Image (cartoon, rainbow, N blue to C red; front, side):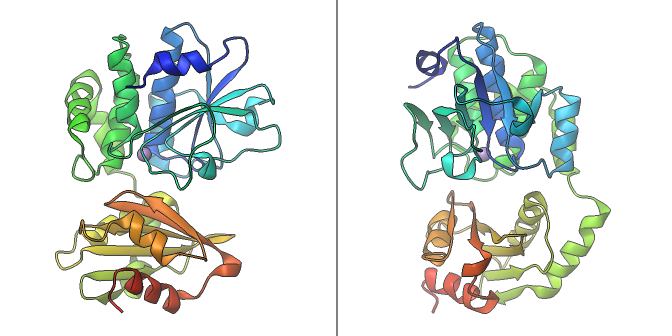
Length: 318
Ligand SMILES: [Mn+2]
């Protein structure tokens, strides 16, 4: 079993260390970075935490402020070639790196990476419901005293990625949940997560309900306007809550690419496998059995109609 000591054995304490969440980070990514940096701090090792892109989620921004998470945009970090990077909740492919990129020395993630990760130390546990659960285990194995804010953030990350312990939950997630639930502030954490929509998101939901196309238990939802990854995920979850629907694809036009959020309630149609199959030669995707995501560059976008057909074909429906 890997842990913080193994990670430390790869880190040079005389060079700066940055823990980087994936681009446009979600709650789990920020919580994982926060938890890991806290644990390194207990071992007397200083680290910065950062992300690429922007923070799009209002509820995540609130949580960062409330629980005093010192995360910054990687641009503001002054990263140099000598900076050692530890990527959390993502792999090199979805973590942006500018010219003065720093060197990736570790990857801690719970997604199946599309290719073998770079760097000497990777700890990939695809059966875990959240990356926060991996960090919880690191802290538990180190027998470290945890600050309440750290526990609350890890709990938020875990609850977010598992849809309040109803999706992709492994036994270890339950253990993490029952510990963090009492160590952290679950009431504030769940209030933040359950109030992540704003009134201005209603138009996106209206658009989704008007444009959705149902075929048996599959719904395809082509949105016309840009929205955040979080709103797209909530729309996907909303459709999955319809009794007759077991597979959901939400499509959204972003500036340079089309993005998709995928949900599956059918183990025979794993979200990550279906999206990879459907996007073959035009885009990339991944995730887990129950949830996944992907993107297609604008110039390769085959059109809504043909994309929907690709998903039907990937499910063996046409
Ligand atoms: Mn995650």
